[in-house]
Structure formats: structure tokens, C-alpha cells
Image 1 (spheres, one colour):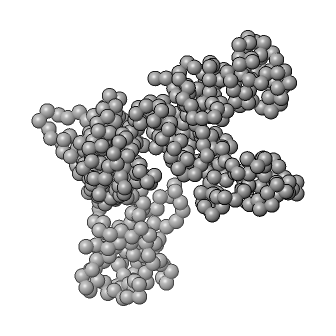
Image 2: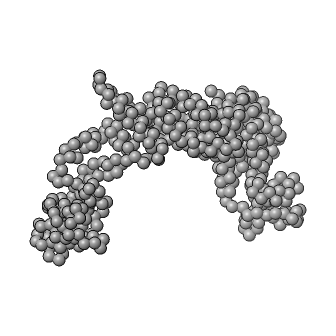
Image 3: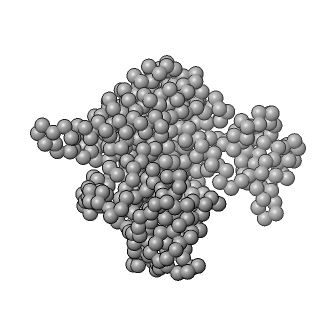
Length: 515
């Protein structure tokens, strides 16, 4: 597929933006200025001030001599970049690859996009008209090369589409400045009488290189397509993305589902061919009022099952606000992983059951939130608060699928580690043990009572001690002697003494509660 690029030139970027924010300033002569060596210098002009002969680099004092009512606004560094970035994000509805062309332009990789708008003419016209409707004075051009599109957009009088292979013809009547050359080189060309590209484009490249240097040749070759030129997009476009435009605005949930079904069928077919599946996907809906609404789904395992993914999206479609209507849908698979095909035994339903559980968890998380379903994961530590951790189902699945983490998988499957504990464990374990006051008779005996949160608990039954040693290779300190105790009200607690018994010096803590 041949590459096609669009260059957009904002002729009065900052002043158009300012007038858009302050409509009452639309008829005023407006400029932006910055302080340079104690003098206010103009950095941006409006169409009205430009037509009056005011130009960038001119002193504000001189400009006010022409326009006493001149409206001067302070210029902020990087102001253009911030504005172009916002405009570029808006242009992503027309192409996934949009780049900033400092200081006053955008570049769009339009390859394979124009057919969605009925052809290149409709495509480029809509972009330009939309930007003009926002109050920006813009020009645009489309060509096979970035250099030609840039040159034509800035040095031709109208929006132009250069057909493939006609770059040389489009460049011939343009001035050398359209090749993005430095001022010193342009002055040299002017002195030699090269006022248009047609004056030197027919000359041998070796002769031009000796006279004007490598940069000159590079820019000329880039414009003609003989040298590659890449653009740096605003955001990294997802590898898996599908678009669907609509001639009529879509407002109903049923129509959204139809559009989404078509997008999922296409993207899942590609993923199936590559053995990959979706973990996270987003549906971007571009409304005709230029608002963007979106919904995102996540899966607990890589899936390229279009029907299953559609069910997840359907749960969230009611949250979409179509407003006056949606005219463009973009489906992005932002996180994709390899699909691991489980080998099932004959007559075994385990594989299909696991798959159904995964789908069920996907639907639950789609309703109540991604990452809301969690489980306890056993960890090899002696200290109770360190022996388990809460993980999401996705993390568990990833661990189970990791072929190089066999020790962890064995740990998950070790029933002895989970069940054959010497004593029961509390249903509720405090993340950090809390100090308590106790009355204990003699060493290795459970306390007679303890005070917790200001309340005294009389102990009727007790079991213990169970000694748990500290992991000396991790930190220093004493062991713990745990007791299961029951108070007069029948409530059971897990408490421990830190270290050996010492009169009036022992430290006691509560660590958990039994059912």
C-alpha cells in the first residue's frame, strides 16, 4: 500500500486560538509578544495585523505606531506545542498516526484511511472544513511524501491533493523555501538566481551537492520520495486497531452493537491467525459534536472469541452517551498476549470448565470493575502476615501460564502447605499485629485476660503455644509464641507473645479473629 501524507498549516495558530477563546477580540488587531533583551518583540500575528504589515520579530513599539489600538498578549514558551498536541489528539479520529510539525503544523499519515470518508478529496476536505469551523485559518495538502505535502500546503494558494508520482510537477513552481531549508542556504540560492525549484531540479545531484551540501540534497530527495522520512506520532498507535465510520449519526444501543460486532469480527480474525488474544480493549466513539466517549473491557486470559468479547462490551454499552450521534468507531486492542491452548484429556471436561469459569470472571469484572475479583496467594514465609498475599485473578493466571516459574506453580498446587498446618488459622488476619495488655501467670501459660481497644476480655479456654520463628536471614528479632484463646462471650482470638517470657517486660499482640 502506497504511503499518503497530509500536511496541515495553521497560518495564525496562536491568535486564532486566542480569538476562539475570546470572541470579543475577533475584530481587534492582535499579536503575541515576548521580552528579548529588554524589548518587547512580536512572536505571533493575526490575519488582520499581518495584512497591515506587522510581522514576527517586529518590535511592539513599532507595531503600535501602525496600530495604536494593538492588542498585545504575553507569549508563553511551548504554547504552540501544547496547542498542537491538543489539535493532534483531535485529529486521531482521522488517522492513528498524527505528528506535531513545529511550530505551526501537523502531519498525518493518511495511508489506508481515505476510503472511510469516500475518497481522498472528501477526506481532506472534511479535516480542513472542521478546523476552519473551529476558527483556525488552515491550509492542507496530501501527497505521497511528507516533503511535498508540506511544501504544497504552505506555498500553494489552496488545498491541493498531489497524485502519486506527480511530486516533481507539484514542486516545480514553488520557491526553494518550500524544501524546508535554512536561511543561509536560501540566501545563497537567491543570490545565484534560483527563485523556483524548477530552476535547479533538472541539474545533476552531484553538482548540487558540491554547491549546496548534503542537507540540500536530503531535503530534495525527501520531497521527491527518493529518501525515506518518518514522523514521530503523538502517541504510539496500537498494533491492533480497526475503524468503522458511519454516514448517518448512530444513537441507539442496537446500532452500536452492530458496529462493534463488525469490528470484533475483523480484529479477532487477525488475532486468531497470529495465535494471539485480547487482554484489554477499548471502543472509542467519536460523536458529531466532537466529543469522544469510550468503554474499556479486560479479560482474565487472552481471548480472540468475538462472541465472548461482545458480551463484555454489551455490559458497558448502557454507560455510553451517544449524544447527538456517533459517526466513527475505533476499536483498539491495547494489550494483546499469546493464546495458550490447553491440551485436554479425552472424556475430560476440566478444560472447558476452566474456560467457562474464566468467561464468568470476565463478565463479573466487567460489571463491578476490572481487578475487583481477587484471591489469596500462598507465599513461602514463616511470618503469618507475610505468608499470604492478595492477588487478582489475572495475576494468578499469568503465574500459572509462566513456564519458567515452576516453583511458584508447585507452591500453588501444594495442598500440604495449605491444609496440613499444625494448628488452625484465623478467618480474619490483621495485616499488622496490634499490641494488647495481658495478665499471664507463669511462662508458657496462656494469659488469664487481655485488654484490647479499652475492653477487658476474660479468657475461658486456650490452646498453645505454637512457636513461629523469625526469618533470621531477612531481619533480626525474637520469635513468636501464638495462642488460640476464647473469652467469656465465646469469641476466639489469635494472640502471641514476642520473645521469651519476662516479668513486666513481655510484649503481647493480637493478630487475628476466629469465626
